[in-house]
Amino acid sequence: MIKHPFKLALIWAFSVLALVACKKDKDNTPDDKNSNLLVGTWKVVSGATDNNNNGQRDADESQTIPPGMTITLTLNKDGTGSTYESDENDTEVFTWESRNNNQTLVLQYSPSEEYLIKIVTLTQTDLTLEVVDEDDNPRITWYDYKKQ
Image (cartoon, rainbow, N blue to C red; front, top):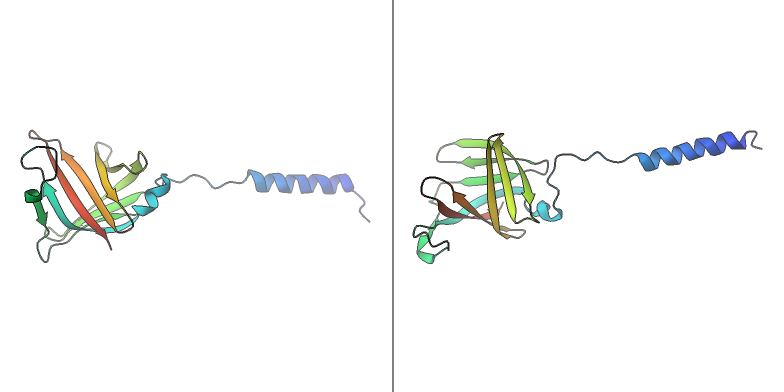
């Protein structure tokens, strides 16, 4: 027989309240539902530079990656990432996020160095990025990746 039903009910209520009130803290991961498609290591297989400045990717502007050269982009689930270029044996790290329902990839190498990159194509195996170089002579470059 229960001697203190009020005490038992109070303990039960606090237990339920504690379970309901506990939630996972939001971490610093990319929050678009489809950003999981971006997570992984991507290898550049081809690209193109808009040499005639018409804003379009023309067939004669396409280039393939030379044999023996590797360029990769790694996007981790925790919002960190890196790029690697074998010809320079160079790895650079950054933080990343996707915006606008995976239409924009944001890479931040430092507080003052942030790049907004247009996502042209994104599937489970293919990624095409459009990068606008903002030098004195702005130029568009496209990079085609395959997921590794």
